[in-house]
Length: 244
Image (cartoon, rainbow, N blue to C red; front, side, top):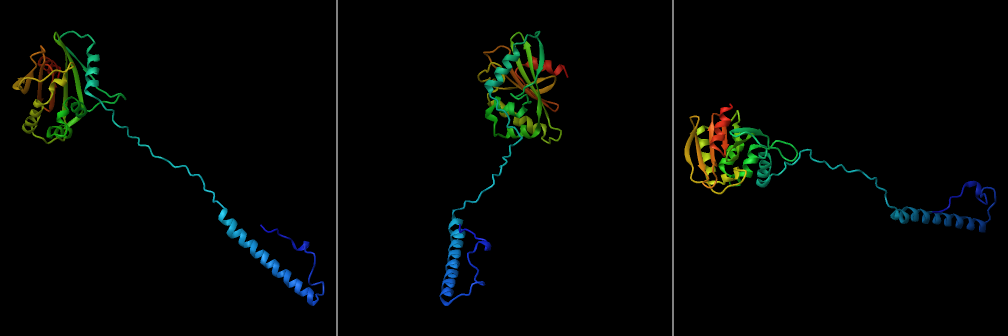
């Protein structure tokens, strides 16, 4: 960058010195040289140095939004049956039941559709799955019934208040469960059930099947008033109904 010189440092004052012809030439030459030097300096500073200047950029903190909605915890049939098995180790008098709450690892209640999808994966994407998801509440009740043959899970879920599905249609769709692995409802998963038959409990129509290799194992399901019951024990279903 050219050095700047203040007027007080100039060695001569043109207006005070009578300039001769030769001195005028020198003076004009000096002026031209000064102008050229100033021009070259300005060019170097603005164009050459300017190209080497790296603009400073301000660091801006970027906010990353994190969803406050937690993904639902995944459950598996193995985890579900293991939890039921642990819960069943509590000793109760025979012909009695207790209500249990099924929650995920974060302590949030599982939905009925979530639990059913794990127990009967064959139903996922079917008409019955859509019917249950759209017409039944998420909240449901779970019970464990005790008798001399073991401990039996029972589930109860209610229709939504705004459900418009008729009883006949619902019962017809529920029959598709009979081709699924209903043995998964048991604490110790069983194999295939024998053919389902018509039955009843407390004068309400039901459908039921049994597992010959497991005494007391009788899977029953039915729509009783506005509630759907899925029970692994006929006696257990009767006992739960008596409590209402």
